[in-house]
Image 1 (cartoon, rainbow, N blue to C red):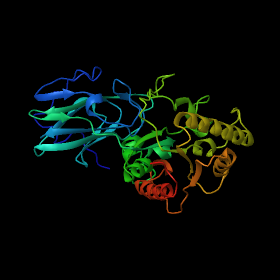
Image 2 (image 1 turned 90 degrees about the vertical axis):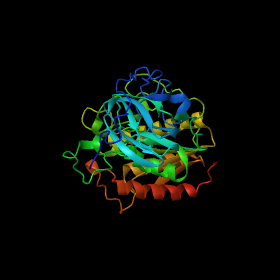
Image 3 (image 1 turned 45 degrees about the vertical axis):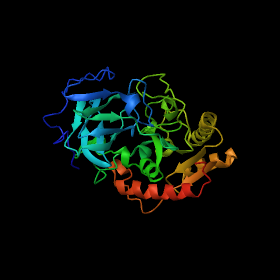
Image 4 (image 1 turned 60 degrees about the vertical axis):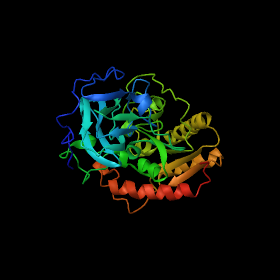
Length: 366
């Protein structure tokens, strides 16, 4: 898959790449008429700290400007990003590092700009320093938040792991990171189709109680769910009070059950099911307390039969909550041609269509 690293849009008038994103409130000002930072000029629904730092995949920043170009102040040497202007992707930034990326040569007028994080980075945080207007231009107030909000909770299937790969073995084409685009995951696609803001809080390899193949014993997805910065123990995202999703889609269980417990793990197959169901109920308790009874919760399962499917169905049945729904999206049409047998880009589009149809049948409060 071809990628570009700051290609023609980095013209001679580009901002000097010495901007210290560690202090995003004071980016450099060469050849610009206006610099305003994140809070004033960018709208995002992702888990971003007050200083513009973040870890979860799919975090996005949206802005507006007037003029012929815009700069994007960014500090991230790990992740990949798409830059979109007026709805069209103008560049893919591959592990850009500390940069002030410049888009230039636009028609003089009002434009929209969107920066979206394509990849996962549980061991590092990216940092966004704001949008910068080109000389003679102006950064406009941030776009208004959308009234609809959807949160997606899950593992690699939710994060879009390896979805851009042309085959299951992507080791020779850049590996999982270079072949992942969370912005084209089924969650992001579904949310955009209904004009909703969204969070894709996906973390590959983790389960509700047990991680893939018993890895990282003593942790689970629940260890990290409350965080903004995944690599900071005890971190808690400070919800500004504006994140109240009408729908939460939860997809956790593939990693719990896809491999059998190994000797030395604290579960038998039977006790794992019991603990999984109890933990799931506790997690639903947390979501209910956080978002209230008006939020629809969708328990999602990617397989029609098996231990995971049966346990998730039992969780919903035992819950006895009309606002908690079971959505099984197994489909023989899924080719799983992404990296390591994950969903392909085609699969994510198919699943997004199925989820959109499913949500349209619910009595959502939006």
